[in-house]
Length: 189
Image 1 (tube, helix red, strand yellow):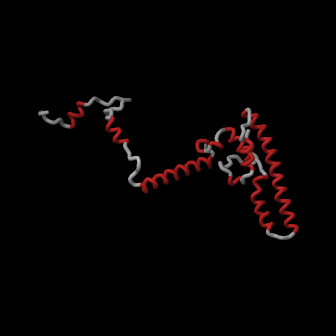
Image 2 (cartoon, helix red, strand yellow):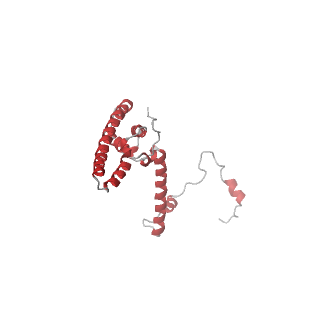
Image 3 (cartoon, helix red, strand yellow):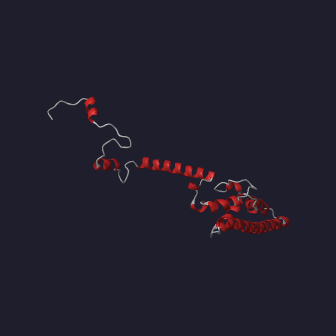
């Protein structure tokens, strides 16, 4: 109390040398830690908080989209996760599906429906119902073949697998999410 002040060298000499594996600093007081963690429940600057949230949400969505494009299981939604769903996706993506040509043909049918000739109306009728029938038959046959492979590899097919495969088969290849990771003809084993 009444002595002289220590110099910096004397203070450093009084401290024990740092030990490897130890934290080498005093434990912070509880009051200090609580003060450091204290934040208001309602932020003062709502505009800045909204902008921060928007940026964070946009970054998370970009990260998730990049993961979806690469087929990374961590970023896929629950319906697309797992080895069984990846196998089904690869089986559908490896073949030509008639269902994926429905949208372009339906655009052609829409154009033909504006023509009020009998041959145009008959071709619209045949194209629409014929394509739908052929696409359904193709999807059923595709699922039966894929189901055999799924059962052989995983033991059984789950409840939503058929719907998952058929819906993917009816999407145009470019618009499928997650993106196809196999080329046509490259069937999974």
